[in-house]
Amino acid sequence: MARAASADAGGVPVELLGDYLRLLTDAAVTGRRPRRAELDAVGALGRRAAEQGVSAGRAVRLYLSAARRVWRQFPHLDRSDDSEAVRAAADAVLQVVDTAVATLAEGYAVARRELVRREESLRRELVDDLLRGDSDLGGLVERAEPFGLDLARVHQVALAAPGRRLPDTEAAISALERAVFDRLGDRDVLVATKEGLLVVIAPADPVATDRGRGPAGNLGTLMHGELDRLVRGRPWQVAVGRPHPGVYGIARSYEEAREALTTARRLHSETSVIDAHDLLIYRVLLRDQPAMVDLVRAVLTPLAQARGGAEPLLDTLNEYFACGEVSTEAARRLHVSVRTVTYRLARVRALSGYDPADARDRFTLHAAVLGARALDWPRKPLPA
Image (tube, rainbow, N blue to C red; front, top):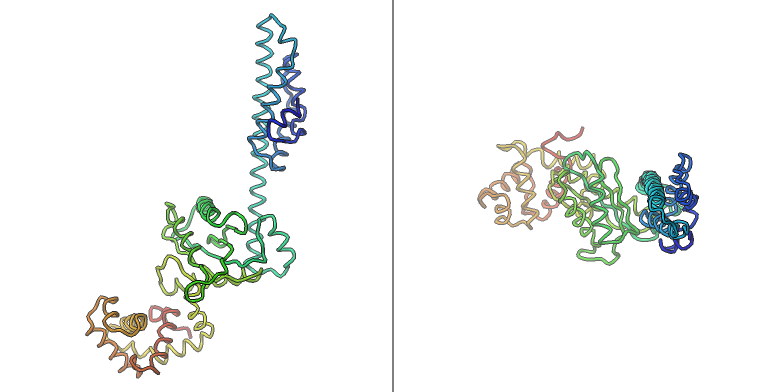
């Protein structure tokens, strides 16, 4: 009977029945109810089923199938003319089934919660070590294998920052996992949290696209589209690091994504999806901050003498360079007249000594403007 019930449940191990068949027989013959210790043993079997990866549905089906088969094997009930006796036996057996299945499910649920907490802790530790670039390469490879992560592949890291503090990150993680797993599969993808940010480690397509980049923006767009549907956390900002191979490539991509997010905030950028590739110039400029501060001070601080301060002139220079030095397009972007743009460019030339229309001066001015944006000048004073 136990083997037949196991087959009914899809091959669930017979051992998970324990003394359940004896409990059913005692209930049918003598009406005896299970003792506390016997029910505790059933709960332990539920925990074992969860640890062995048996689904809750299959475990319950095993117990129900066993009860059905045991009931059929009671000849004294088949031949009995005493309907009260049959009714009493049926009631006792159903009581055992009800109590045992409930206890089995409770033990299963407890074990699953423990497994989820343990897995979440292991996942968080693994993500922390991967993002830090832990030197124990062999240990990382071994720990990543249960999560389906092939560290020999090319990966990229994306960070999602909520506009408002999330009281509970579980909903955001679940939504993100569903979207990313549906697109990329559940192998080679990790979703976790770190320092208030949602972190996604995902495989990257090695095929390059426009401007020599891989499709980094695809992951960012997918994440932002899913997170933006949530009630809490909006507006979201997603930064995606460039794809890199190997274990240390994950740490490198993470640093790029984190720097991109920090730089975007310093630039007061409201861009929803930030590609680290687009902000490489700022990494170069800020790598030698004293030199950049010196450049901004020497080239741009004279603009503070203009009426209205330096900020309108900097905004004009920024849009002028961004649109390829076309005054009409810069005026459209700034919502001012072409004459205003021409006047401001003339003031820049007069105050700084650098001519935006001169090819030699243009590079110096453009680098200084980018540096000023990265340093958040003139909103903040230049570092000493």
